[in-house]
Length: 268
Ligand code: HEM
Image (cartoon, rainbow, N blue to C red; front, side, top):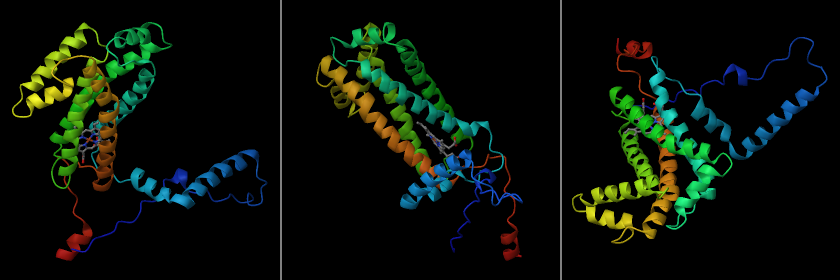
């Protein structure tokens, strides 16, 4: 079947150049015009060297199917939750000390003494639950709307990995305050991993960083929590969004496809 190339969607009217009004052609440029011209020149300068504007238009100005509704915002909401976690995490990392002797004290300092520390820690702590809930709701939306079917199977598989990584993020983050609750809860979690078939014992050994739970476990959890998993999440979210932009989103299952007049003509 020949591939039909769809025309690039037109720019929205706000971005199209405005024609001059009658009599305005030879108007002297005011400071605002000069400022606007400066911005356009800067964007043009970058675009001439990168051709990024066509990619940006391809990504942002897409057709969405009829019937698109609020449930379609759950993916973007998960993305915002991830960005919020990454941002607040950077500020927490400026004060947190992942050593068995100082972790608890550094978290106490963040909560009670650092400027806006309690606020940033609270955003990160509650934000983690918000992200888990949003990702589950988003997965339920894509499942109920049948968005896992051809040609979006790969995006569903990437989504499953994103879900596992999000859960792993919560699990590794829970240990970091290193208080009684996080210490014993993580021992339970690691032991549950150890009871899994075949790879279970290796997994729990890897998580502990040896046979015993201690200082190595904490630094290992910290490295996994703030370097390994966020890196993987960012890369996979990029792939996930590329596929969303490439394949478009699915119409709700109750929408009926309209007959294409071109196709009807060809088969008549
Ligand atoms: C960090 C987690 C995730 C982020 C940031 C994310 C982000 C997004 C965004 C922004 C969209 C497009 C808008 C929408 O349909 O809501 C989308 C679509 C999609 N997502 Fe996710 N997602 C995540 C996790 C998941 C999970 C766990 C699954 C399933 C296991 C999944 C499966 C899909 C599928 C199949 C689509 C295509 C929807 C369609 O064609 O209508 N995603 N995702």
